[in-house]
Length: 264
Picture 1 (tube, rainbow, N blue to C red):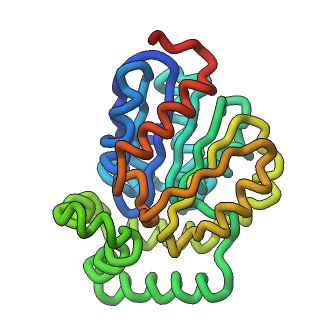
Picture 2 (picture 1 turned 180 degrees about the vertical axis):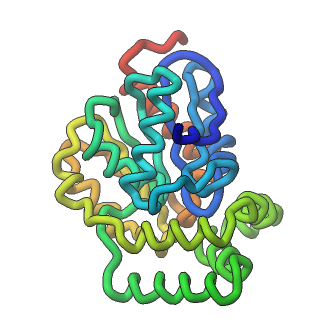
């Protein structure tokens, strides 16, 4: 039997599933999700190869990771939910929409451009893979911390790098390599974006170099009826950099789009 993903399941009410970036774990979402927890069931899995979740026996791909999320939902009797995903967590939302759109009540996509890797990005990712193979995960994690966290957050919260580093260090070199290869092979999702038929919020961070505001605006233009938010002075890890602001935005989005009414 395939081992289920590690997860935290908090609160009660309509379910909101939070999918985190790489190479961190579900703890990334805890501060923002706390604003929903009083009135929602908040489900926070560690994606395959992250945190305490096993990588699994299959070759890692965006498709197999999405299937692992669906198996967890089945095991927990979650028929449908609101989904929030950041970075690779957002890439999984495109795949979940392809595989099981009936399970998605609404989507919040943060820092997750729908485009496949460009030739330049692919070359950079291959260099990253070679670096992990030759030097381990240390330089890779340091580079991620340097590029994915906005400068204002580093200045405002000097401990943020330490906390994120602690999450990253739970990932093995084997998992880091498998996930980078999965990201390099991920499909382009622009055509998928145009088919999304549920309420969708697109969150772009002004300082994000990985999924730029222009790329996220292109996503918002492709998804019918989507809402676009530009998060000022934040980087790729925006929900962790300013969790109260992003959490309040997601709480409002959930309140407006939950299948069940929320007690006030």
